[in-house]
Length: 171
Image 1 (spheres, rainbow, N blue to C red):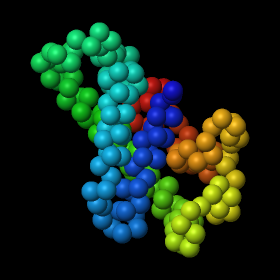
Image 2: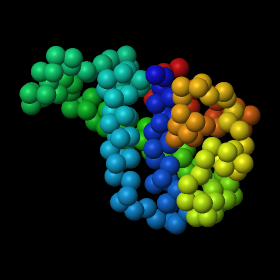
Image 3: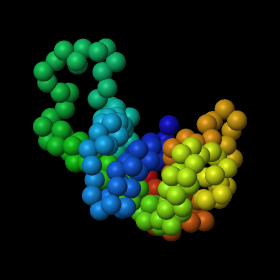
Image 4: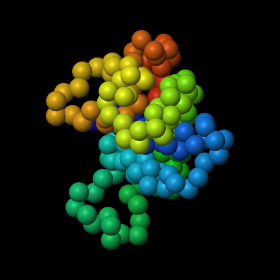
């Protein structure tokens, strides 16, 4: 799994919370599960998978399982502070990205909300009618609705295309 794929998952998971802020001007406690998921994912990206520039190509993963019984971390307090900062930056960047996608597609989002209120259950065809066809082919084994927010290459600004613009990306 690449950094970009994992960052897409973080962005998508924060979409509900971002939608509350964009549409209602406030957020609720309803995103607890999403926040827990993205925090664990960002932690794994920074601490286990070496997907962060500041921490670098280091993994603090303990495959022996002995770390669970230890009262100390395998890194210094200074490194722990950097890890906390990088995790926060990653999650906040995903949240801002989710808000940006929602704001840029607000009219389509409102159409989707009306369709959902009318039908209660929607299908792929309903989404394609509102948002258009997906900008890539879906393999048969892959679910049609995977929850990811995909920005077609043609819709990306030049600055959005640079990997180095993403927080913690290894260029």
